[in-house]
Length: 310
Image (cartoon, rainbow, N blue to C red; front, side):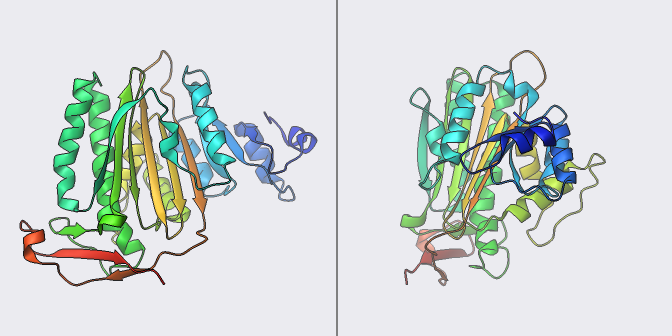
């Protein structure tokens, strides 16, 4: 735990250590431009989420944030174990490994964007039958809709597979071997939804820009016409979740895990973790023409995206 620049220098920094920095230490270290940080940093925030979001733009060495209240929550030991195991893994991060054996749930592969609504309804029925409260259930519904919409409509554009956004009224079809992967589940103290797309087109800069714009206290959010929205959906996920994990292997996949904890006494806990890595092997995509009408009978146009290995 680092509380000052002096403590940082004494502790030293290398890839085998994890530094926990509070706000005072973050500002002091940032002011000392000559300090190189080689260790992963977990920032501890005892202020609202907006403060933590505002650290991401000027301090690129911050990728992990825990609220002070999260440190007091019963879940923190399990959470930190998951975070650190993923952080030091030599293999591709798998946020699905955070769920553990005690969580009951479902995992589904979706190839058609227009089937997401029916699946979200089934997800809601599952959560309701397993005692998830109405507020948490609505938050998870909203998160699933936002993440699935991003996966089918925004990610292909960001990956330059499609030259321009596709209206949400039209279907987008992915090949079977590159389907969008949805998982959801719960246990007594936790409910989660997780979405993984096959594009890996979400950049840290894009995510930080969206969150920073929406985190402004005046909430005077300007619409980002390049992706057809203001980014408010992603902001609402971070603002409503107990924790969010984001893992991106560039040009391979984007995986986002959203967790909602059963409320404990005290301030609402929050945490978020950003894992961005370059891809060792690039996936190539090719845009095909319209499929046969029978494969998507309820829409005007179906866009099929197939990978072709080279």
